[in-house]
Image 1: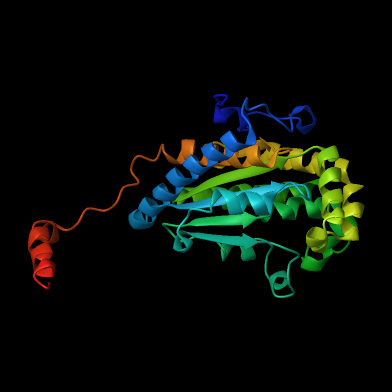
Image 2: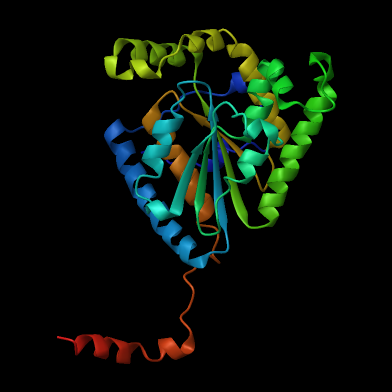
Length: 293
């Protein structure tokens, strides 16, 4: 299989989403790609076990993408081998009435992973500068004192919000959270085909909503605002990775590869040493248990 440098997907300078590929030739068939995913997934799961014992870092995995980009299935396949105690998935939908009584980051703060765990945000705090930019009327539901009408939601408003998000992530990173942000980049044609599959397969019909077609008409706006959000918020400690996602198996492997290549750099993540008094008496403890036979 083709040797891929995972850094080629990392955003380190301004990008134009239209110029980025939605597919990549791995020079391998699907079976081989899945084999490499399985191997990488096992290494990640073992690393997470050590992270759980180490208890000094947490990992925040953020995933965004257009409708049908494969977020749910990617999460399932990448984290399949993890101990269930070590990973918690949160899917952020339309804010509830309770959530709207708080600031927009509140529901994300309370869902952050504990030290030793992975937290997965399926759709993330970036919805607050993506969907709300496409549909600024949603901001009015937040009942903000400085926003009385749509005219108040101007460029200055969005710059403040981006600054709040950058500060949010900076605060997390400085307190031991390792942050990954992935954008699954699919083509408009691939989305069309996936929506058609939802309609053609009876067991997938439940995933379809007529609203999907209305949002599809806003494709260009969404891409524009994704690009702007990525360019404004990709940083050294909280980078964005743009993953070609027209092929689901490839996208899953590439995300797992990015995670493994980056997390394996944390050489300080080790299982804690036993206290000296326990370590020196391990043979005695073994003998006590063996004598029970």
